[in-house]
Image (cartoon, rainbow, N blue to C red; front, side, top):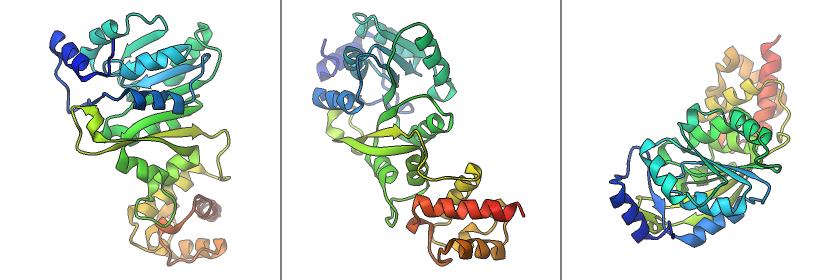
Length: 291
């Protein structure tokens, strides 16, 4: 069954009386070459466990099952569960869970599958995420320390551009620094809006986020690091002296002292700072706060 074919998608919808949910960001991909590029780009091996977020009708799930030892697909829409039972019935290495990814303990799933002997390799996370919730899902996975090697995710092109951006541009922001602190970032493929049913208003892109074994900077207090990022980009048009005042309870004079210690000009703005410079500021903020 060619699950990616528009005619197949339409037949499935009619047979199950299934209406696509705009609130869940349901857009099904119809280009097999892009599906293949996602699986290849994720680097899925025959011994790997794959956790898929939002399988839809199982287009990417089926292709992934051909490459992996085990696939656990997590789908929030209960109306899709019987459809997945039909479209994926020929695969014995797929487990579908009807659950909200933001309320799912992925490490618990990984531990259970490893204990059951379902896989003996690495863990890859893949998915086609609803645009409105892309960032919360990615950050939850990273902040919870999910034991995955990589996260290969389709997202709105604008979000992908922000995640992979470097210092100095308008697209560089808090999400750029946060994701790049946890991961290496690589674009797998661009995805035009024309290959989806229904067609979204914007193009998409697939990024592979390689989870780092070691962070690129050393921090005294990670919370101070993220507080500096939030404050800096929360008022990104202001100078560092102004935007960082109040971080960790530091006064304007305290921030001025911190910036002097790091050698970073107080009139610069957050969008010009590298991860290393944010780390230097955060470490000095921590030291100053503990006096």
